Length: 370
Image (cartoon, rainbow, N blue to C red; front, top):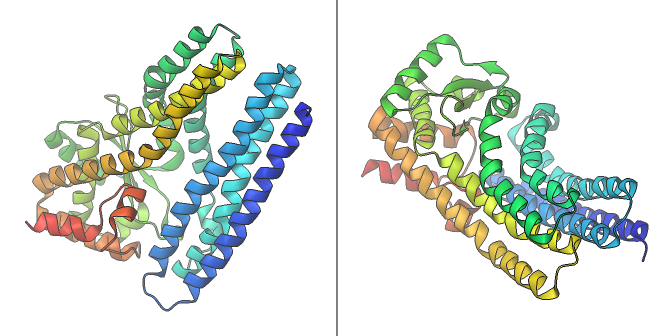
């Protein structure tokens, strides 16, 4: 089969997968939305998380088929560019199609416009992260070097240069997702809390009132390039003391370098598929390809569970620091209020906790009480 035929097959598989996910999500979202359950928003969030994982896997598989065939055929630069476009469309289409009905249903349940969840700034931040994740593979394939050279480029690029670049690009990412600076009063309070925690961070604000999202996140790990980004909807909905507790929690992530740890785990996961494609590019022995593929399968089986457990431990450790800085009762009150503002379920299953990388709010508040 020609390269064009393989690209058409990959695109067709992505379209079929996206359509199947779309109609599945549409039926499931309508069923959840039609119930009188007060936890409809939470159930739709569960559906959205699962669809995100499955759609990314489907799109990635179709894209991998196109890339692997292109590497074997030693095609021209124009065909290589076409392959890249098709691979990107495979991933984007399946994720957009599979998630769309769940997002629309979630927006209706929350009483917000569906368009509020579309943001060019967020897409820009995602594009930066994807570029950092993929550049070692692209370089390894472009230099047309022996297998061991390509392997070293991938390993060093993913495990050393990848986290370093992500840390250096944190200011750009923070400014994309956080449009506004934290006002002087809150920045001064953040500075005081940061001094107590032994770290230095900058503050940014995300405009999320239209989405009714109350959240905060810690970005970056390099000294002087760490940020705490918080939504304006959270600032509106929490008391001053509760907001301080949320900031203290995010400072716990910064002090423990949780972002760096998670990035290292993620970049490690990308090494086996990179080594596999590098081997395909230079016609490596079948034994090498089989061994690397087996390692990748093992990584796929344990990665989500491992990352979920790690994230839960990090959240609890950040709660501990927040309790020391703001008091356990204040942290517990902030968590309870966040549960109400985001319409999420407090008592969740262990599977859901691992999926989202957060322990259930009921577990966290009960732990703080003791």
